[in-house]
Image 1 (tube, rainbow, N blue to C red):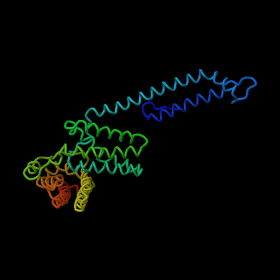
Image 2 (image 1 turned 180 degrees about the horizontal axis):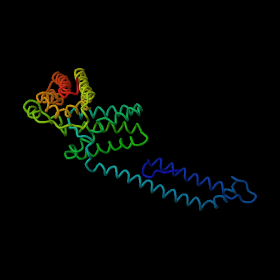
Image 3 (image 1 turned 45 degrees about the horizontal axis):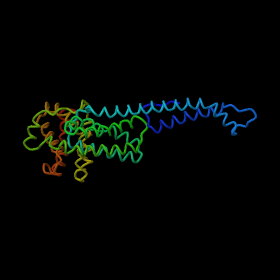
Image 4 (image 1 turned 90 degrees about the vertical axis):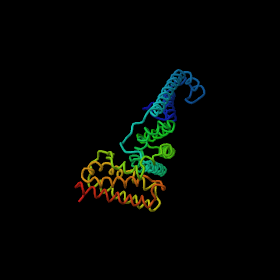
Length: 320
């Protein structure tokens, strides 16, 4: 029997030790002496068996106790190590910008992850975990930790619990609970970080878009990728019109947003006015508050950005 010290729960440790003790007890029962003229399971035999087995039972008890202490100590060290990993900065997983749209997408992604866990949808949980919601929880740490270290640590600890679950047998109840906590922590971080003010329209938009926009990934700008990004932006516009803002910005938090960054440098070299126009439309999508852009303006900006991506693909010879 294998006992994975430090990698399992206290309850399973106790069960394992109980089984070990029982096996030793059974062995003692089987080989215990039978006094001459006595029957097995009788009072006389029981006393003789107990006297003969007592040394083995003492050894079994001491062995089991030491094993329990070692296992619990290993478990405590594992917990301490997890907490310690959240005491320091968490490295980002992507080079994507921390936008309000991406934050909303992460909240929605974690809510959907929790829903999938509650429904015992293991495949859905695994697929959702690979999305941007998990990546965002890493990317946000550098910005969140200096302004609210406690919140950053709480977020990290819940994410680590989910990551540990994904690495072993999934406990969907634990994943559902922690995914909801992560969504709540990200929601709490939103006003602290004020990501909605990262990019401003009007005067500042012009100066922002006059400068090259850094690439978000190193993925090739293929026709499939550009077409998917344009379609995603149009679907986002439809969801905005339907009042489904969280779903709309979840779409924008994916690769469609990455494409608008990745295409900027080559497009500026081929058609700078088009690159600037695409940037300005994306700013109109990213800035979600009504006092800046109305829903109709954001819908229009999303559809215009989709057209710009397709036009940019044609200017670069990627799309026909």
